[in-house]
Image (cartoon, rainbow, N blue to C red; front, side):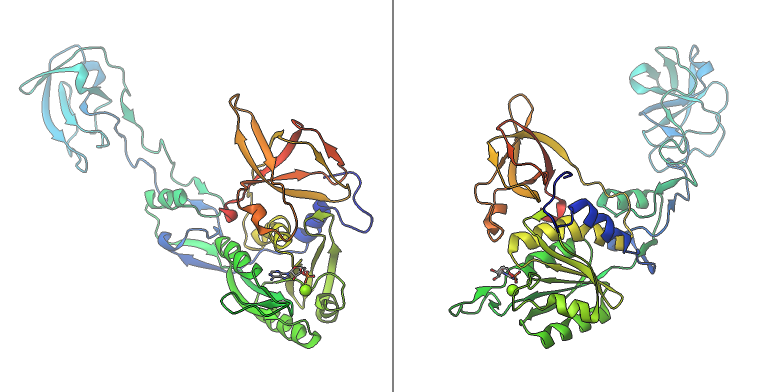
Length: 408
Ligand code: AMP
Ligand code: MG
């Protein structure tokens, strides 16, 4: 996305850097139990209080013994099932029947698999030579006591919860949830469920944007539809800013007659930047209302989604304390010719697949208008076109962003 961006428009990467620079992660933490912890962000390195496995244990069903006894006839002195332990110390010439996962008795240094042992009554003969350590899982082999099992800033996923449970943890320190306010601006907008009057359209941005924000773990407060009036905009912005970490509005960011976002932002806070070299999206405002972060998304539905995902979400992740989030970027071959006007980085909704030779191919949808939410319907990725690119031939290699889990 380098090269020639339209004059007056900030390149996407610069917008991201400038925005991230202004964001300080939340500091407050709280303690949660694993069943409440999905999607929360760890507020400290999590250290294992124990070894996993906790003691040397058997990797097989078989017989624990001293490897040096393998050539002779051995006396089976006990059986140790899962959940049990042999309390004595194993002596020369003795073996203990043992199941997978059971602790290896003191004095034993190997386990012979039951398939490699011949047992008659309580006598055992090994059918092969045995080396010390054979079929024993050492204590701490999976996790060592005092080692970091999850670094600070990890977004907790189901597999992490089981990891924490496996070392017996009940309380996890996480950052508090981030608080986000959302609102839509526009006199033409009405809520779904009501009858449309001439000139009206259904307000469709809030519901989808809110769903993404909730998936990201934010506590969302909905400020509804704000009319295109200076006073109403001022009041909503001030109230939202007083109780939230980030205020997100959609619509009203162009500089048309009814666009009040800019004047109110100038009055109550400040604007870091205004117009981004992104398509769809161009009018995207970032700044502050008092101390609260603010993003003004364009009203066009696809634009609002793309700018939330590409510009706001990385900032929200940082605010929430998340570090090292990986968004996968791959390359694939374009399945058609593309001609375009250069100047803005473009995020085309597209479908990718693997062809018979295991190459990734990708086909942007035909309708890419910034108001056409239908362009998401069959899509599973964005094709990202550099700002300075004016055409691409079929089969050209292009950058692909598979849809973020927030979109799935
Ligand atoms: P704006 O950014 O306010 O100039 O709006 C750009 C276009 O998006 C206009 O056609 C609006 O009617 C439409 N639009 C704005 N906000 C919404 C919304 N919340 N839901 C659906 N369409 C919207
Ligand atoms: Mg509007």
